[in-house]
Length: 348
Image (cartoon, rainbow, N blue to C red; front, side, top):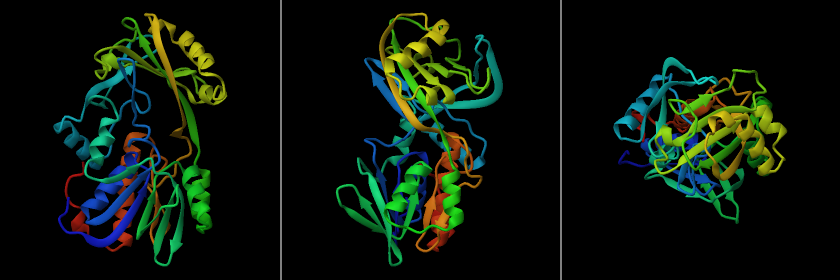
């Protein structure tokens, strides 16, 4: 962290991977930064849940790396013991191992450990829903549920595009038609996640996960199935995560948990060879962007800076969100005319 503080401020909305990396990078430039997150914890879809003595990654399951800047971050996290390599491929539906040479990483103790690590030392305010943003001269005013108003020189919006637009519209912010069109075009696929605690071992083959997406068409009901004990995050229980495919999840979104669980368990029964002891479901409405924006972030307003970021920009998944957050931070630096020298150094 830089010792000197620049007389500029930034507010980041959303404490997922994109928001936290943006905030961390901006803080290192000496810009005072506050993150507002409506949830009870940081991380967004990098989520780890507990049921009885089972530990589950119920959102994002792993991440890959292609970009050098993200690879540098991951190397640092590996050295710090936050993440580790899981595998270089997953099992096919027939149980055979589909190795492709690309390392997949998981977070030691669960995926939520990564955002928690990035958030250390940042001013992150959870349970704080941003209701609106509005221009006030050359600055932004950010209205929090309950009436609190915070001001800043720049704002980065990282929630799903639909939610970010609602916040902007609530403050009557006028976006350029091209910026609005870009945000309105972004769409997301839902995912219903099912967590099972089994009385005994599962039938999930090594390395502890079966990837079914793309095997039998877009309508595949079960896209992913993982044994969190074999993954290494649930030492005390046989904890299984099942992800319904996007078409299945959309079609069954309004059905009861019992109905959804019974269908998915029946489909995946040959990987569940022990009696189910406990069940929980979680619905991710904005699980995966299906029409992402081609650029890593979107500068919607230059003065005062308003930048949109997240996994719907420049590539989906964890790496895409990370790179989007870094790109958004660079745009804020540029627009606030902060020297690049401040941006040097590790993040995390």
